[in-house]
Every structure is written in C-alpha cells, then in structure tokens.
Image (tube, rainbow, N blue to C red; front, side, top):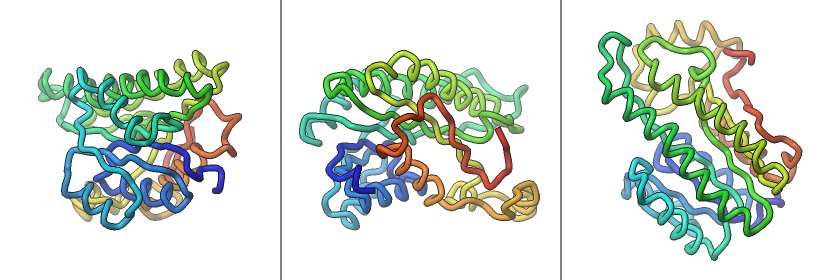
Amino acid sequence: MDSLKNKNIIVTGASGGIGKSIVEKLYNSGANILATGTRIEKLQELKEKFKNINILKFDISEQKKIEEFINNATDVLGGSLYCIVNNAGITKDNLAIRMSLEEWTKVMEVNLTSTFLMSKYSIKKMLKNKSGKIINITSVVGHTGNVGQANYAASKAGIVAMSKSLAIEYAKKNINVNCISPGFINTAMTDKIDEKFKEIIIAKIPANRLGKPEDVANAVVFLSSSGSDYINGETIHVNGGMYLG
C-alpha cells in the first residue's frame, strides 16, 4: 500500500518467524522500518536481506530502559514515529498447580507490562505528530484459554483490554490502537509440537491448516495503512476460523 511509503515504523520481536514476515511485508510496502529484538545475529540477517531497514538490539523486559529505547529508535528513524508493532513476547508454560510465581510474573511483566510501556512512550511521540498507529500482537489463547498457559493467556487477554482503553483515550488525537490475534501459526515454535497433537489442533481449524507468518503480516500492513483509519480498539483474528470472536 503506497500509504506506507516512508512511514516510520518500529517492529519488536523482529528476529522471530512472525516478526520477520512483518518486517518483509512492511518493507515491501515502502515503510521506513526499525527492527528490534534480542538476537543480534537474526537482526543482522534481516539487515542483509532488507538493506534499507534499521536494526537495534533491545530486550523489552528491561522496562526502565524502554523510554530511552523509544527515544533512540525515533531518532534513528529521523525524529518521528508513525507506528509501532508490539510483537515481542515470551512463554513459560506449566500447569497451574505447578506454575511458579516467577513463571507467572515474568510472562505478565514482559507480555503485558512491557507492551503497555512500549505503547505509552510511543504515544508520547505520536502526539507530536497528531497521528499514529499502535498494533499489538495478542493470541487466540487470550480468548479461549489453553492448558498450561494460564499466565500467557492472561497476559494476552490483558493486552486486548489495555488496547481498548488506549484506543478510547487517544482516538481524538488521531491515534489508532488495535490488536491482531493469531491462531496457530507455522513457525519454529509450532515446529516443536508433537505431530499427533498438531493433527488434533488442525482438526479444530476450519481452514484445515496452520496459519503462515505472512497471514499475520498482511493484517499488520492493513492496520498500519490509511485504509484502517476508522478502525480503533478492535482485534483482527487470524486463525483460519478456529475461534470466531
């Protein structure tokens, strides 16, 4: 979409499968991208493939450094911020009675609190532009729940509620805050799933397949474009019909 030409966009979690696809789709749409993640070698591979992108290693769990990161990233992009895609997140799965307080707290802190802070400091930049877009990547399990993922599901459901609140607060400032909720996407993470369990999952998906990273990335391109200007506080479900919210 030509509406993304030269638009400054930050993508977190860019070193993973979905993040890489998001970077590629936005790059092909003309955006000016800063890709960030925790694995510098993966970021450098992105830089080699997409010559004009910017890369900056950062761990969103370092919450006291988030404001500084947003300032630095915005400076690298040329002084303004149009959009941030909050894609980074972690899992620490366990059954509830075995889940430690550390496993619960770490997932909530990174997935929910850090996403809030990334959004907060991005909004401060967007207010100067009098416009902006925030896209938060959640998960189908934030709507359905999942065995062994009470912490992860709660964090992702929290992102949805938080995004709605931010959307209400800043709609009059021409800032859109939306979510994308992927189902089971074919990435390195799902490659680790036992084949028999994977068959059970696919049987529950009307599309009869796992999603592709580009399925999520396509939704990101839409929500970051001017074509979504009147969409705010919403969640786009990308799950092949597995969950109909």
